Length: 506
Image (cartoon, rainbow, N blue to C red; front, side):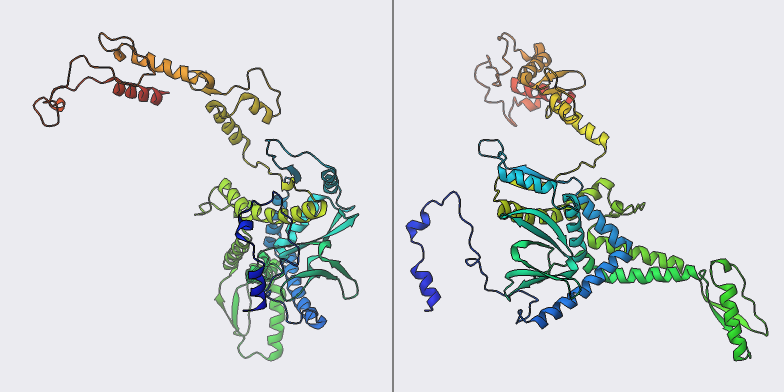
């Protein structure tokens, strides 16, 4: 038996301790207690070796530089990245109080007040929305985003964005982060402790210290798109000429060179479109293939769709309107899928990091959290129609509707109502209204001859005065009711039929 097994068995908790009630608040485990045993993917054996660290950093910086060039050169990459960043931060960020056990909300404390100050003024150059928009942009383009946290007296007082292409995470073989290094040009470097940087990364296959961005996943279609656009540019620069085969006969080399120069001057370029190709001395000109602009444009659209699908952006969100696009869905359906599959996961990833590093670790706040405010992008007519349906069904009160549109409350507006085409009823009197409908529709038919008026609340059938039932009255017998005249409707059957007809007509 090993020493670790002996220690574990010796100091294991007793059954009495295991069944003891836990404390209401448990202290967070220390870094030593949560130290991992497994190894992190992508880290060299001797991670402290400066040469291996520099080599890995240099290779990563080359990839990040290519991603930045793709953002600057491919408009579909930049449009998708910017759209996601703008949509995530469109409503701004707000501090929300948690609900307490009594049904109320937590009250502001001095720590919360200082957190609000940090949200209003994160640094002299950027505001909080701009800061988080840069974070979302770096996540979509590079897969990682870094925020520098400036502390004063143990609390955060400023936040700054850090260039993701110059940042390197310092960790051991197990992935335990000990700090960060920023290397701008080999001369200007900065070292940060682990708590001075908020590192946000996207998901990555096989794990690792760095995330994998959508832009990196679609580098191949981006490269193909760049070559397609370069080909289109060259075609239009040369006037989209057809590819020709020219037989100059027995001309000398000097005459062939002169013909090439003349063809370039007189037959290439937008101004030469439609100019015929003239030859002399028995030379023949033949067209090998026609113009390919249409094929190039089709390839451009195919590359475009692959790029924006890698970012999870529907075509309609980028202004791409295609009629008869099967499976594309309506604009509202595309907006919903865009928010559920793309925006909300990115927003939650950012908020989780901010809530942990700023609220919990920075200010020690447990009763508040940060969240992005949502914006209702639905058509105003659709919103008002939904409100009206809720008001008619009693789900909304009039004062709640007026509060949502910024109008003051009115007397009696706090009572829910049920509104139909022919009447309006208060939900508090709905039971009496239902009884009145039953009595009105039943009328004299609801009363059995010689019996007292029936209470609509009494669902039991009236007692029969004919004595015991006939033993021959049964299925297949002599006096089976199904073989003669239909029996009179009993009270409960009549009650159900009229009630169903009443509700169907309402």
